[in-house]
Image (tube, helix red, strand yellow):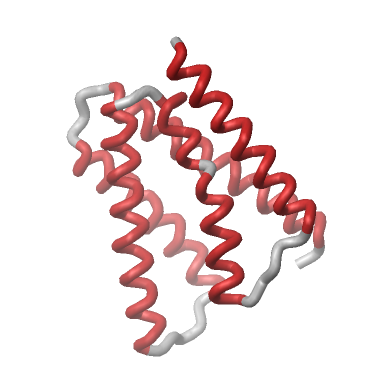
Length: 142
């Protein structure tokens, strides 16, 4: 995949991720059953991924099934906990903790793929994290 196509793909992915986070905030503000909301998110993802899988599917082994199951369980648990967190506190308080994803991605990238981040990645992660800490401090003052 060329860099331009990859950049467009990453932008589209970020838009969808932001949409999911906004929908979680909306769900948390309303008195909606968290299990019902989670089911609809799961069902929508199942439909979309099933359509994509028909084009890219290759047979997989038992180890991959176990990995998919583990990823699905932890991802679902994470989404459930995000909805609960957003129902208990404002998004401006929750969001700075979301920035730890950058550091987890760097740590897991190194552990699993021997990927060492370049200087720009580290500087960007520090800037984003510091801005998150600043927002958290400002939110706690109000």
